[in-house]
Length: 412
Image 1: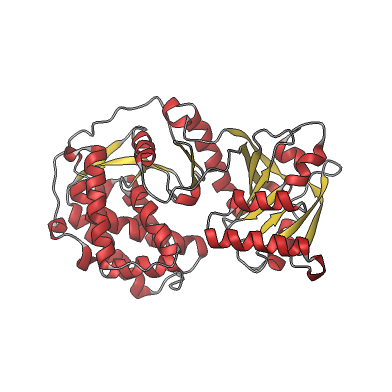
Image 2: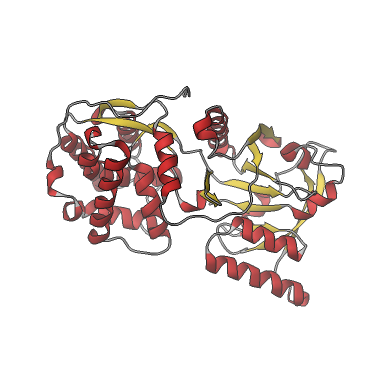
């Protein structure tokens, strides 16, 4: 989907009659799936690129396009678009008396196309303070994701141990045409850490303390969710693929046998682009995929694998074997040897791969084997016998309490 296809949907982003503002922007990356709409001011446009874009090459390209458009205006490098009735009040409230200041700095990033597509809108503070960010559902099918993220931000903000990692939620509301949105305080730009460090360890440890549940893995909520999803995809994917997935499900259950494992809260999309490091503090965004009882190694694996495959790096058995050893060391340190997670890292890694593959298929409505994530994850799933440690053939453990404390958080 290029910008010309997306623009009619963006025009629905309008206020109730008489309460909107005219907003004019320039379109950056108009031929990409995820265009960025930047302010007319060259300074503000550069700021928008720094705020939204993490990829160094894409960021450099964006700054170059902005300069070309500014210094060679006759080339019309960046198309201009205008919202006649932009819902500034509904999204950000009364920021200050001079609304024109905020309007001059607003930028809009369009998320990945599909039924869960969302807009992220940045509004700087006209007085130089911390700005605000709004996330808006492009389609009503994305409403539930917006609502879920809003609910998690609110719930986790009431627990001191988790609140320090979160942006502050300001409101959850509904715009015209029944599209949900949430507004939260922005943060300084910071950096997106690509290396897993002490702050990541601390965050995942704190998250794991939110009421862990111990069950045999085959009866865990995470495993049951995966089985239900696989069953629902029988009409979408090829029968041979679906049968293979069923075999993998059965294999996970055989490998874990009666293994009792902790089911932990997970972020669900713990990737560098959803994180910001400001000084030594880590802030975590995009909570729409969070789950109360999830795979205890999901976030660790996702952080390491997703950035590699999306940067066009191919996975192989050597990479997977090495990561598996890192994962075992991580969980043994994080949860303790007695928790049994380290011994189950093999089948839990298979679970993560299949869970991610089936999630992509469910979200898009088909299995795109050319997508870099799916292509690599499918390959690793098929070659699992070559990178799995031999000791994962069968696991049986007794239930041993994870050495964690329960917080006061109540989740539903």
